[in-house]
Image (cartoon, rainbow over all chains, first blue to last red; front, side, top):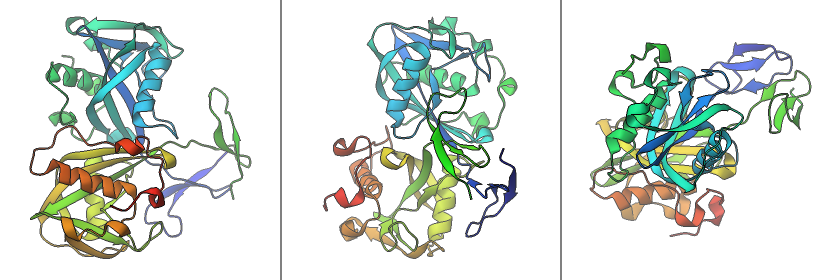
Length: 182
Length: 182
């Protein structure tokens, strides 16, 4: 098993994780999460997570972007994997920094390309929610709340400058349990 | 040294790079490049690269986002490191996919917070260019050309929906030498 130590590799100016067995430098860079707010008739698609972290809580279809795909392809793949949803992207709704855990989230606004949703392996259930039905106290992550608010704030206007972090968490450092209920 | 083989780790559904010496799984996810189009009096800041790839060619101040910073902080850091520029960000100008090499680029529009530019360690020289002075044939990467065009297309309008890849390279798969000169 790898045995990492923190040290500054030759030619670098930052400490990195270096395996003391094989000298591999495990560069840690922020990861990109791609997801979507899929809307139909004023209702939004949410998935109840079947996996940790936050198993049992509700989230938007979203996940880590993979190599050799675009952000748009990743968002469509996640909607298909997690919610059996074939979606069409309308544009970028929001761009969030979650610096606490090294994430940048690209959230698209989307509609269904073909009808139908079905829970995937990583979801316990999937459902469409009207605004007043959203399970605010059981959302998985702060960014889910932020993106849902961005959708509401947009209303029926065309997409413009992407929404960003809320003013009370500009850098994305708060934990979900520090987010007050609505 | 690490000796990587491609195999599907337990519980995963994709081939990953796994070190046959220490079993470390080197997940490869796309990386985020953060940069800026810094404008003053109709001129834009470019840096001539002192490092590979594309040493000697002109680029926007931009680089890999680091852990524990936001995209905005990363863009400001890169402008400072590469061009000695203290900048203030106005908003997101463009979001580009470069799927060929697993990059997502977040390009901000910016102005100087305090005056002055100076070549950093990774730059041979830094200069402000009017539109007609831009060294189109000596740009380092396709995304530099795209972002400069996005700046021109925006003109004096307020920032709106971020620009994306051009229609002839939606996925960002072309090499720089496949990009025709203007």
